[in-house]
Structures are given as structure tokens and as C-alpha cells.
Image 1 (tube, rainbow, N blue to C red):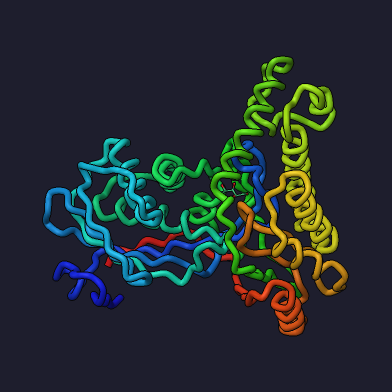
Image 2 (spheres, rainbow, N blue to C red):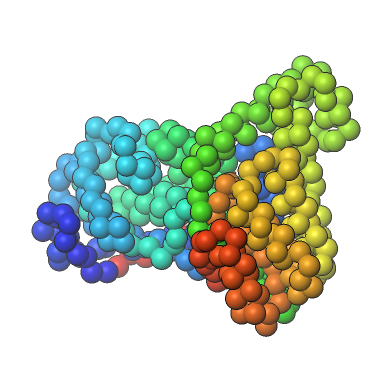
Length: 387
Ligand code: GAF
């Protein structure tokens, strides 16, 4: 990895950088199961072949940490023993991970790190988790911290809660670290039990269409949705104390609380319960090769996210609608937290070029925004190499 020092007076160490650890940390897609992870439910993600690459070496200082993003030509220097939240959001992923390592009592000395990426940000393919998990995995290897992969996913999630302020679930970090090439994961977000299912879509491929919008509601609305679900659980617990999360609630039970739940808590909860059920049905459909059934569930997921959970946006809805009457597209839905980013589509491989041209033209006509495609393959989770 070569570095360029144009906009910064980078320390000399970066002009002749000799790393000892190299990490490839992937983004993720999610086939179905959206906003279910923080409700202890089920998701179906996998890592993709678009990644963040990080290289590390010690720098012989007691606690000076130097991080250079070659992709963004951005430089951060901080003291591992004196951490505080930054106003630059990307810095908080790095600072947050360092903070969680310290909170676990792990000893970190000074180091230099160079980051490069071919993972789009703001596209809903989880560049955040890739950065957190990649950074944590690199420091784990550099300082022999002895953390397991599961510990890395959990501390990265905590970093996002405590430094970035996004109360995310565990899906993105888990997928980024634990995925297996050519497989998707059926993940139980309560037990963290993972079933690896071969990603066999016959003559179809997964295609991401990037709206190239990222509405800034995303973080605040995300935390509000989480809060609505947790409050609903508190109300349900008054009658059913054994209920720990919406995962333990079925639609019949929920209907008893229709009048007691405030605001939109009822429709949010109904969506989560139905989405968990869709993930289970999608698992059966994929295992038995029923792609039409799987696609129908994808559309059902989008409808719930659009109308009940209300985390979609006009650009995503337009693309999903555009696909509905095409018999070579089995399913389409918004993916990730929402309010922008990508749709994920299950489409006959030989129709991709034709469809993308048609969709891009219609999308540009409607929104005056360029539509991008991101070709993805189910890939291996974080790879750490000692050089
Ligand atoms: C974001 C979060 F980070 C995930 O934890 C998950 O909740 C997802 O939105 C929605 O399914 O990617």
C-alpha cells in the first residue's frame, strides 16, 4: 500500500511504511431480516467482496496512535490513554474501538495504521462495521490481545453505541467478521447461533442498486425505532413478564396490546414480528431452491419497511416498484437501516444489463440522480495476515 502525504504533514513513518499486520475487512449485504437484530430476532446477511484494507505497525511510542486514511487523505493522531469523542464522524469508529479495547483492560502501545477502501460509504453496505471490526482485528493481532472473533464483533458494536451514538444491532459486525465465502448466514441475534447456507441462486444473481442518496434522518430515526420497540416490550411485559424482546411475541399476543401501545409502537412491533417470520420462511425457500417464494418474501419485507416501519424513502420505493412487473426479477427490497442506500435485487443474471439501463434512465428522469450498481459476491469475513 503506498501512501500520499499531499494535504497533511504526515509523520515520516508514513512515507516509508512497513506494516507487519494486514487486514481485509468486508462490507455486508442482508438478504432479508431488517431491523430485527436489535429485537433479538433473525437476519440473513453475508460479507461481500468490497472491503476496507488496513495495515499496522508499532511506532515505538508509549501511546501515540497515528491513523492515515489514504482513500480520504485524512489523518488522525491521538493518545490511547486520553480518548474523547471527535466531531469528525469517521474518527469515532477508530477512537471508539480503542476505547472499548481499553475498557476490556487490553494494553495498547503506540502504532501507525494506513487505511484504504473500495467500499462505498453511505450506501448501506456497512462501511462502518468494516472499519470498526477491521481496526479491532488489526490491533488484536498487532498487540496479541487474544480476543476471539465474537469478542471483536461485540466490542465493535459497543464502539458504535458509545462513540458514534448509533444504537445498532449486531448484524453488520457479525457478518463482516464471521461470514464464509459463497454462503449466507441465518443468524439468531439472541443466541448468536449461525447457520451457514450455501448461496445458490441458480441462474440468478444478487444486484445492488445504489440510490446515491443518504437522507440525514437515518441515525436519529434508527434510534427512535429501537426505542419504540423497547417501550412496546415494556408494556407487554406487564402482562407477560417472560417476554424479553419482540422475538418472544407473536401476532396474537401483540393484538391484546393494540389499545395500550402508544403512537406507532403497535405497527412497528407488528412489522418486526412479521419480518422474523419472513426470515424463517425465506430460509426454507432458499434451501429448497424456491426463488419465487423467496422473492415474494423480499417484496413483503420492503412493504413492511415502507408502510409499517417507515424507514424507506421515495428513491428506494421507486426502484422497488420499478422491478415489480419484471418477470425476470424475483424480489427487490431496501437494504440496511434505510432512508437511502441500496436496494437488493434477485435477478436473472442474463437480464442485468438490460434492466440496469432501463432502471437508470427512469431513475434519472424521476430524481435527476445517477443510479449506480454494485456487483457483489458472498465472501469470507475479516482476513488477518501477519507479514
Ligand atoms: C443498520 C444497523 F447497523 C444494523 O444493526 C441493522 O439494525 C440494520 O441497520 C437494519 O436491519 O445497518
